[in-house]
Every structure is written in C-alpha cells, then in structure tokens.
Image (tube, rainbow, N blue to C red; front, side, top):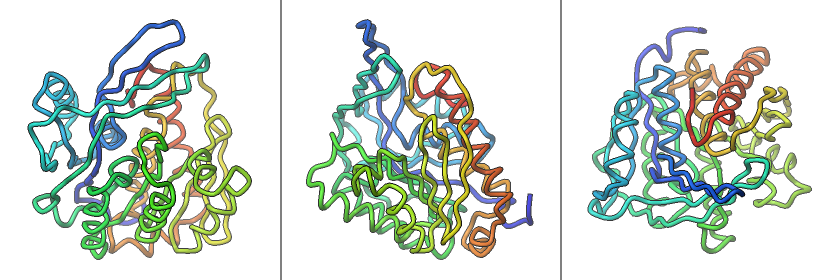
Amino acid sequence: MRGGATSGGRALVIGETLIDIARAPSGIVRTHPGGAAANVALGLARLGRPVDLATHVGRDADGVAVVPPLEAAGVDVVPVHRRPDGQTFTAEALLDAHGNATYTFDIDWDVDLGHVPRAPLVVHTGCLGAALLPGADAVLHYLAGVRDTSTISYDVNIRPAAVDGIIDARERVEAFVRISDVVKASDDDLAWFAGSGAVDATAAEWACSGAAVVVTRGAGGATLFRGAERVHVPAMPVAVADTIGAGDAFCAGLVDALWNEGALGAGARGDLEALPTAQWRAVLKRAGRIAGLTVGRPGADPP
C-alpha cells in the first residue's frame, strides 16, 4: 500500500439490483440475484470493503430474496427509488453454447439521492443506473456534487436492449466519462459506441479527458489507456460456466486494488494520476483474477 489516503472511508455504489433469469441452450432456467451495481457492491463487500448500495428493491418475493445475501456480505442497502412498492427489476439472460449472455430487461429507474452518503471515499456507478432516464440525470448530478471529496468510478456496461435513443445514450456516456477518474468499458461497449474499428481510438480519446480508461477484452485480457500510455495484461485461463457478472467482478477488483494502492479519495487524485506502470499492471491482474474466478461459477457469484 502506498500511503494512507484510503485507510478509512466507505465506497458507495449507485445503480440497479435485479433478478437474473438465465436460460441455457438446454432449456434449463436458473435465477440468481444480480444487477450490475449490486454485483459490484457484493464483490467489494466480499473483498472486505465497507460499502453502501443506493438502489431499488421491490416489496415482492424477489425483493425479499435479493437483500439478505447483500446484507450478509456486509452491504448496507440504501433504498432510493421513488416507487419503493414496485416490483423488483429483472434481466433475462439467454446463454449461448459458450456461456455468453444476451439480455432483455424489465426495469425503470427514477431515484432520489438526497439522503445517500455525501462524502464517500469512492463512488462507483454504471450500466443501467447511469443510462436510464430520469434516474441517470440524478446520478450524474450527485457525482458532480461529490467530486471534491470522492474518486468517481464508472463502468459503461451499456445494454442496448434497455436504452432508448442511441444518440442520447452516447451523449450520456460521454458526460459520465468526463466526470470520472476511472472508466471501465468492454470492447463490446466501445464497439457499440463508436464502431468495431474504433475501440482503441475511442478509449484513447476518453483517456485524454484525464480519466484512466480500462478496456476489458474477455479472453483477450485488459488494457489501460492513460494519456499516451498503454498497459496490457492477459486474461486468467479459466473454464467458463457463464459470463454473467464478469465485468462487475472486474470493477469490484479494480476499485479494491486501487484502494490497496492508496489511490482513492479526492485527496489522492494526484496519486492515482501518477500511479506507476508496475502498480497499474498489478491492479489489472488482480481485477482480472477476480473476474476469472467469477466466470468459473454460474451466475454473478464473485469471490
């Protein structure tokens, strides 16, 4: 660990909690608690980090089911949805023969963040919580208000099936990139955003805004873009059960590893920007290992 900038404080994760309904090619259907934000919060808690999750869970049977595993891991669930009596969100994942998932969603996102913690050490958001209106605008406003105290971590994790108006969605992604210190995007996210031939060019452009941009490439590993610097690490070899929650586990590992390096919190922003290449390589390896362990298990079940 480099210094004491992150010896205290809590993480705040903002976004969706839902039920993953996984349909295998064989016809077998399995359900798992999930949602990108909930998965990241669960991963951080299992890694020993104090974490609050600002989210929505319904008062139905699914809502009763999703909260206990989070709380058992140490996550403090903070309800923020404007319709707390609604149903729990769902994501139906159609798995192919390699365990890759294609999603359809039943979700709305309208939140009030007025009573969530105001000065967390790090705030992480992304996926549907940073994409669906009107809630995404509330999340962006909250981030602008805590940038003076907190590191901002953003996972693009775009779900085209859930996003209306591709042009507006792209503008929203760019707004979150501009306010963030750390951005994680898969190569699929960047191909959706700018075309398959512009993945690295887009990541490099985003890095020019000052963010550290990490591109995940599945079995191809992960690449850091920071200014003109490029750091690549290979993926951990693993037998894939399915890819549900892989990117979320990577995000939890990324935040956890930067926490280890003393590079979180607004007071450590200079340390994050100056983090040596060797440390970044270790950060990416740790995040990749955590994601690799997760894809070896059914559902979003981080180590």
